[in-house]
Image (cartoon, rainbow, N blue to C red; front, side, top):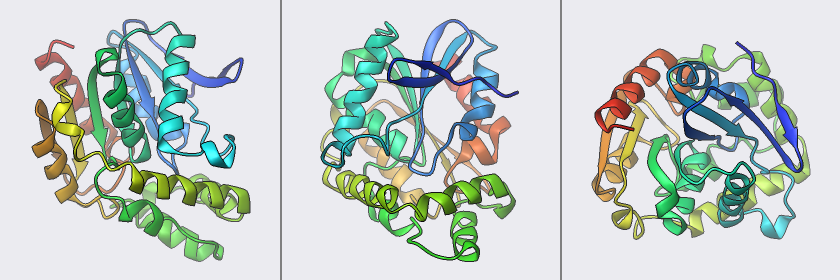
Length: 254
């Protein structure tokens, strides 16, 4: 099921369903398609699922960082008149969610992290392909997933276009550097809200030990593994991801 992008003011977002808000936060190479399975499922079972397009490449270079992306989320929630939400972030999206939570704990009902950055940042810069030919980009993109077939031609084409756009490459590296500066290790123990960590057992971008560390540092967290899965469990195994998350939300009365 494809969803229509809504454009209002400076915001572009997808919204589906009614109920408690779940805000989806995509990563650096993330597009809206990464979350189709989550959008379709949770919008039908009593949640309002909202996916804003993060301004990764449209902010001025000096404002291209985790802190300002977190501020963007705050402004977006105010614009949508959302007081409280569950935040679900993949990769950089998880980091933005964590930084937002650090500053706005009372506005976050729960955190859901999948392949999140925030603790281990070698990943963002290193896994990101520098300029290169199409075959190289294809290989680097496939490495993000356990099953290379998840990297469709559309995804590879998007990333190929991105890495051949010098401004976007510069902004990507700027965000990656900002992520390193904003390591969340000291902040996590203060985030005493329900947190669900869903991680691919075969994630090479943010390896499994990162998930274990998140679980250790977040005082009210549960950790779930997805087998034969890389950096984006909600894309690679959408049914399993949805089942884990739905059960967890029920257990936590969320």
